[in-house]
Length: 336
Ligand code: GDP
Image (cartoon, rainbow, N blue to C red; front, top):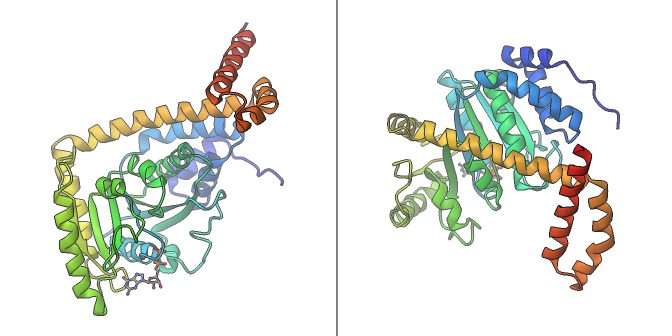
């Protein structure tokens, strides 16, 4: 495949800061690249836009497939636009390794929102690792902020580990649920419920309204059993219909109340500071892993010995240590 022409750092930065959507997309693609030359260019772009980031409300939205996430995000996004905000949606699809993910492959998803000039929608590749999810999505989020978006909605499919990564980069985490199905049925892990700042029973419309209200009571009772959150916020249980738009205003009210609380008690900035440090730590792991597996000697020892580990002839931890020692020794030799 022919490599795309890259822009200069200055051109990316200028384009992003101007809110040029084409350049914003190109900058995100650059960040997602696994080529080292792209990554180095990307590092510089990130460095230059960093002081223009941080000014959005970052909201993670999750729920099992079919719960109504895209319908919800479209209506919620339109509501926010109506209030005068610029809205970016980043969607992580764990089933896809490419930016042409199936999560947004269907053109009809969020059709109205995607046509609105005040909105920007971008699928984010999940990558091979959890580190991959955070690295790429976080960088995409920051670029969107630099481009002037005030609310960033990060969508994940609530069945896997990507929620944990996403909760580590957002300010507010929203879980969509359905009435009439147990948690087990919905495949939602307790840990994910524990992370959420709002649990919203979706599709509360038509004949479903009573069931949704009942589910709201059950979830409210269940949430009382969870320990107090460090933010000082008591997670809200709400109902809504992404289809009709009922209840969406209340959800935004909750987000705003949350923001007010955590800004006044200092948690907002404390949490962001912690997240920035985690970002650095994750990136160290990501970079180390990348150079490690690219190392020739590591590759040949791995090739020669991985079968022994597979068959149980050699201990896994022994080979791991051997590989790391080999890598370190070689790096030291290269330094000299
Ligand atoms: P996702 O897989 O979580 O993104 O879910 P979708 O937004 O694609 O919705 C899945 C299905 O549920 C679609 O057929 C929607 O029309 C339907 N749906 C979504 N939101 C609502 C809602 O609020 N009420 C009702 N009754 N149906 C909905």
